[in-house]
Image (cartoon, rainbow, N blue to C red; front, side, top):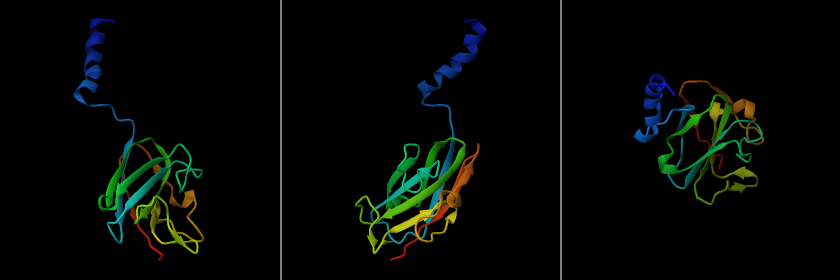
Length: 146
C-alpha cells in the first residue's frame, strides 16, 4: 500500500476506536399520542412487508418493547431505504399478548399513517410509508375500543 493511500485510509480505520461508526440507514422517530395510561409495555413492530405486518412474525421486522411510561417517543435506528409499516400494541397488564373480549381488543393499538381498522388490522398497504435517505417522524395515535 502506498504512503498516500495509507494516509487517506488511516483516519477511517480509527473511527471504531473513537466509538464512531458509519451510519448505514436512517432513524424513524415514532411519537405516540392518546395513551390512556403508563401501565405495562408498548410493543412496536417496524415491518418491511405484508408477511410481517402487523405481528412481526417473519424474520425481517424490527421489534422494540418499551415501558409504557417511556414510549411517548422512541426511534427505530439505522433503517435501510424501503417501504415499511409500524404496528403498536399497548400491553397494559404486561402479559405479552393482546387481551380480547369477544374478539375485540381490550388493550390499545395503533398503526403508521393512522391506518383505519375495519374487521381486524389494516392491510400493510394502508399503513405503509417510504423510507429514503433522511430521518423521519411517524406520529401514531393509540386507540382503545374497550
